[in-house]
View 1 (cartoon, rainbow, N blue to C red):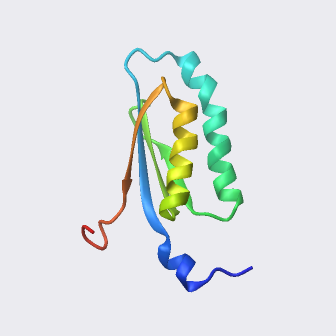
View 2 (spheres, rainbow, N blue to C red; view 1 turned 90 degrees about the horizontal axis):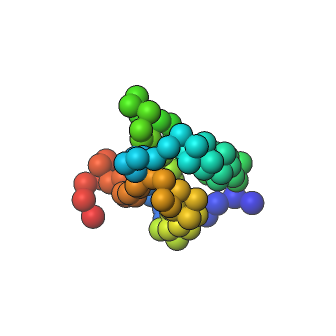
Length: 101
């Protein structure tokens, strides 16, 4: 099934930035890592764009993904449910190429 022009036009780029909470142990991070990788893989496997990786400080990371507002809300909620208590995270609409909306 092909995407309609309207579906493509509704998609926007989003940035999800995460940072370890203070005093987070390696065991907590190891516990959530497979689940986070799973939801990222699910996103890619459904044909959606996502680019993610850690920062060089080993304490944070970033994901850039394409989604409608509803898809982004769902993705971030699922992510938040997994990482709650271990990571601090923020999501931003990537509008750098188009200016503020």
